[in-house]
Length: 425
Image 1: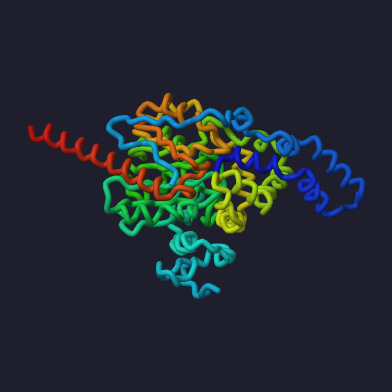
Image 2 (image 1 turned 90 degrees about the vertical axis):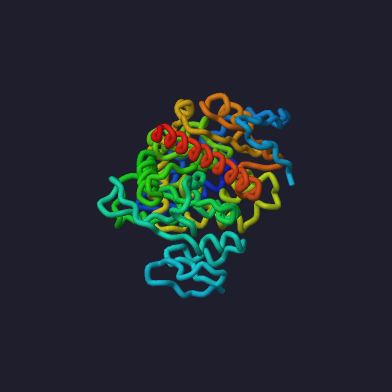
């Protein structure tokens, strides 16, 4: 999900709920006067301004009556318009499930609440979460990084690297991942540093969780575990900004990009970046709250029947990891992603996919991507779909990714054949 979407969800939470969090602060020697001082500081803080106003300006100006139903057939791309249509406690010693079957144990490093998830696809993917070592310049020791490793790792010419949205995890891909594997692809779902289920506890002494740190971690993950093979980067929401950021700074990493309702033209994290640290932690507490997560899930889905308590629990699970709040505050205070002026530097082939009923990022942004991406192969409209098409329309999204990956692989094979002919001549 986009950072601006969570900001709007914060705005939708009551001011009384925020005030009650301040009232819960333990009284010190100043007693009631100290609480009054805190309330006064809070009323004038950027956090309260965020509650009152929100920062998703694009939503405020969105024209809901402007139909976005035109898509494009570019470079022979197929028809773009898509119609709407008590767990075992056994754990292995290294914290990874000993099997991938239906009755396998969950990895020991996941929060215990994982056993409470109801959606079978989420439970199955959670059982497959592993931690792989990633050596970076961010810590003296490798970062044990959470991800989903494909069954056919290393066996394709164009692997797929799946990112997730703002403050989320690889479980976003619960409804798409198996479809990609069954389609013969090599999908790697990686957790962005500071989110997901990686080991980022204080003992690991990771120096930063900024955009630059996230980029370094993603790049090294790609280099060390995908073997430096150019990959199809798939970025939903803020994951789209992460994909663009990686492509611009490390053009050797992507073979192409698929951008799903991508946040790229909404810069940074708004007023959250300027919060004093104690208020930043208050904001992070709100991000973790059931109330806010429930509101965010409702905005993310067009089909409100999908916005269940279980969907909220899946999206919130990583917030229960140790030191999640510290990593989140570090990211917020670093300013967040700023890639809007660099979209035009993405030279690799790209595909833009958008839900027609996105309540968080307006559909006209897909046209802006088409105009600014140098090699945009198409804009795909998913009718009757909200902000997270890979969750709401998984079959369509999986097929689009598979088709685009096959197209890229065919192009690379033709290029290689051409180079071979030149060499022979």
